[in-house]
Structures are given as structure tokens and as C-alpha cells.
Image (cartoon, rainbow, N blue to C red; front, side, top):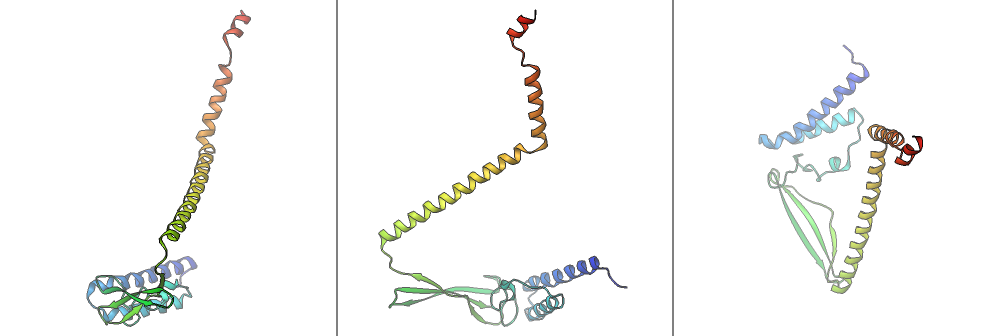
Length: 185
């Protein structure tokens, strides 16, 4: 029995979702040896269907352990620590997040982040104040434009148009003043 295009697409989605969900369910089964097998099966399925995965999933040692293939779950199957190294010449320190897989004891590090040390307090405060002002300006611009868009949407609804039309009819029919009644008699 052959499948039409929509059935094939639906099967592909169900198939890959099932494999991806199995990868995430494995840590609770206490069988970490299967993690690598299911991860490889998932990657093979995406290759078969010619799907491009985000770097966060494909890159080794980011979402999955690069050695055993287990999903990284902090404090469950992964220990996390921050290591800091100081460079006295440039007065910078480098912080690195280090993962340690509790199943295979593999250690991996996330790209280091450089942190500037010993910035003068006055400069730091003035830079922080300018950044705050810029953030507030952006927020105010976004909220004002969002408010304007919301008002326009409300004005363009069918019920609002009908109510405006009814108000116009009422104002025309009741526009007679007391003076016009006296003049007609």
C-alpha cells in the first residue's frame, strides 16, 4: 500500500516526533546505554527526510552528551559548574560553564565568556544610566505604537462600525432642537 503526499508527510512527522520523545524519555528509564542508540536513530531519520536541525540540537555537547548521547538534565544526569580563569595583563577574567555527564563522566565546556574586571564605579554608573534610558525609550516607543495599533484594530471591527453607524442615525434623527419645533408650529 502506498501513501499519498499528505499521508507521507504525516507519517514523517509522527515518526520523528516519536524518536525525539523517546530520547527525552530515556533518562527516566535508567538505561543510559540506549540514549546514544536512539539519538543516532533520530539523526539518521532527519537525514533520510532531509531535514535541517537547529545547531542547538546538532552541535555535540550542547543539548546531548557528546559521548553517550544522553539528554542533559541539570541536577538529574548532569552536573554544572562555572570555572573562572584570570588574565592579569588585560584585567579580564574568563568564565566557562562546564557540564559533567553523570553516566559516562564526560566533561564538556560551553564557549567562554569574557568579563571585564575593575571598571571604575563612576564610568560604570554613567554607562548603566545611559543604557537604562535607551531601554526605557525603546519600551515607550513600542508600547505607544502597540497602543495605537490596538486602537486602530478596535475601530476597524464590524461591531464598532455598526455602533458608529447607529450613533450617526440617532444623532441625525434627534438633531431637531427646541427652536426648530417652535418654528414649525
